[in-house]
Amino acid sequence: IYDLDWNEEERLAEWQAVLAETRELPAVLRAAILLEAWSDIEVLQHGIWLGPLLVAALLRQEGLAAHHLAGLHLGAKNIPRERRRARNRGDRLLASLDGIHEAALAGLKEHDRLVMAKSQMERRLKQRRTSSKLADLVELVLSRPIVSTGMIQEVLKVSKQGALNLVGELNLREMTGRGRFRAWGVV
Image 1 (cartoon, rainbow, N blue to C red):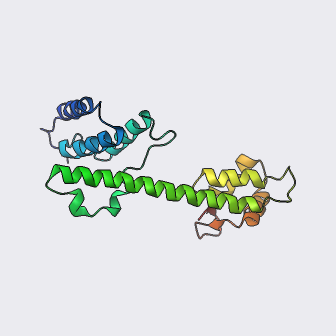
Image 2 (cartoon, rainbow, N blue to C red):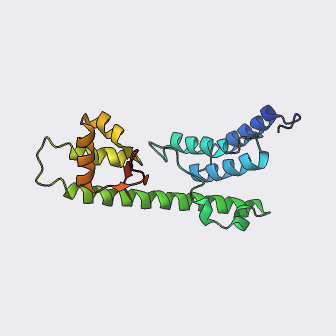
Image 3 (cartoon, rainbow, N blue to C red):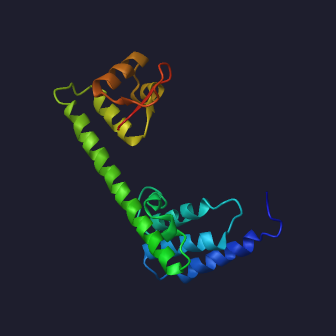
């Protein structure tokens, strides 16, 4: 259901004015203010999800996230709802900053988990032939959250049975719980 009197262009111009006003602020504070403004102004009727993506793109443009869009709301689940929806704007901004901090901590934990998984998988590569595709499978598994037999076959140029054998050698966790269309990942 759409409100016919909703003026998205005017609301977007208002948000862009906030964007221009905060140009001189530090990037993370600016991100928190822009997130708050997006939810206060309600720029798009059915596009509340777009604001955090735009702010994450701004953080990447500012050089704080080089290769990805930061999941800004990832840390918000650790912030009590009362703080995130406080009446005082300053409290809401502090909650947003704490949410960004929690998201950064979650990203660091995930990075550490992947580094540890890589080191564990690389132990299995010792005393392997240099032509072994196992090292390529390690890189593939770490670059994607989940891999299937078809993906392994396509990227590594091996047969289906070869892909299954490589997966078995790495002891990857089977994620789907199915017999026919299986997929694996690092846990």
